[in-house]
Length: 116
Ligand SMILES: [Zn+2]
Image (tube, rainbow, N blue to C red; front, top):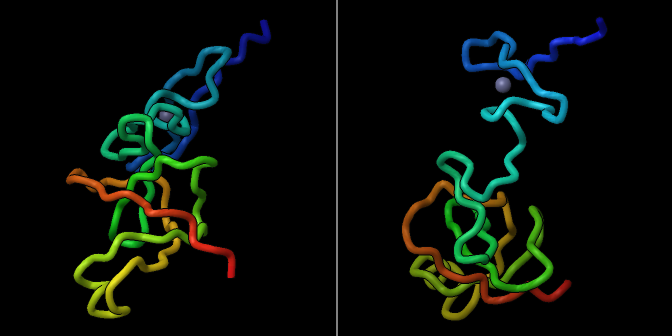
């Protein structure tokens, strides 16, 4: 029988390939599958239907369309640091990550930054 037993094979923390068996339709086990769920362990990708993105150490929500991507430049609300550095008003940041591990209250991305 060509009933090959596929295993996940993703590297585990121990450095050995993951041996979880896969069903026909699976490409990786539950732990290693690329996350389609918005609540991957410890990482938040969506809040109330709004996208969550990281700009350096900060995290923001984005309610606009289309969704933001890594490298997109956005206008962000003033914070104490931007005020000190760039003066009052919005500041321009670049999306460094999608989702965040930050668990506090998130501010909103003001808008996409105008193309320079
Ligand atoms: Zn696995």
